[in-house]
Image (cartoon, rainbow, N blue to C red; front, side, top):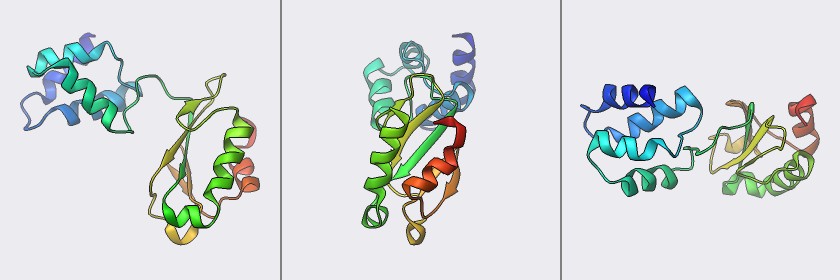
Length: 148
């Protein structure tokens, strides 16, 4: 908790400091521990409900540690039109994890995103923030290799 307080204090003088603090916590720890919410509220002199509301509003903030590898599948219209649903169904079946979840062994977190800016090469997927286009179920398997 001491490190959380230090990160919060480092950003507390900024205008609208909550988002920069949350991003810094996520960057350092990989997630935002729910126990940090009252501490952040105290440092910023806002309600715990406000902190919680911001964390839960933005999909990029996590309340639990992600898997060692994070896979995001684009679900925007352009990718949907060229087969993203098939990739999602295949990913969920092959990993044994639903969108927003992590495999039981903690190896992969499977998420959705609503545009990766790779519309001409959909379906688009990121694996640990590396972008791939024209991802079919077979290519998905190849990208994840031994992680499945």
